[in-house]
Length: 165
Image (cartoon, rainbow, N blue to C red; front, side, top):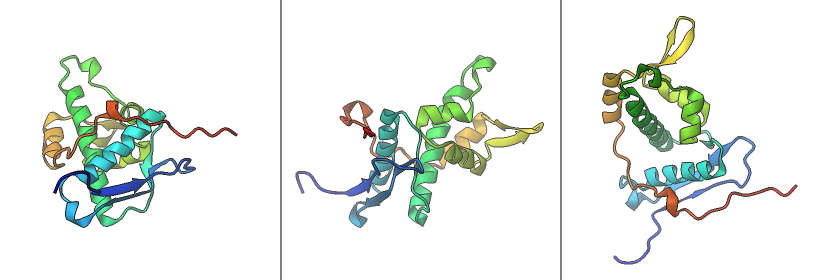
């Protein structure tokens, strides 16, 4: 009842040639659907931000992993797009996939796939644009679920692996 309890775990490679920010994630069955998986996913991206690089989970994802990651990616991207879309200055309602990757530490491929899946990355006159339609953003944001247990990145005391060779 009291004290510390293991609710799940994840593993991370010290160096990943494929830019994986997480190799394996598990939330114990009795603790599933309580937001701990979302916490672990958020935590892994907080570590990626500390490393100063973007990443993606090791593929292929399990069915439950795919649903969790797709929801996380969509929720975090939509929160950013909502803020940008609410800016009264049209010149400041612009963002690129590179900008989103830098802000979230998500891989560009995961961002592109997510925005296409939720119909916000659309072809326009021979190029792709991010459609920050407030109605679409709110529609999809309502379907992503809550944040779960939040990560306070300021409390993370961790040093990235530094290869000395």
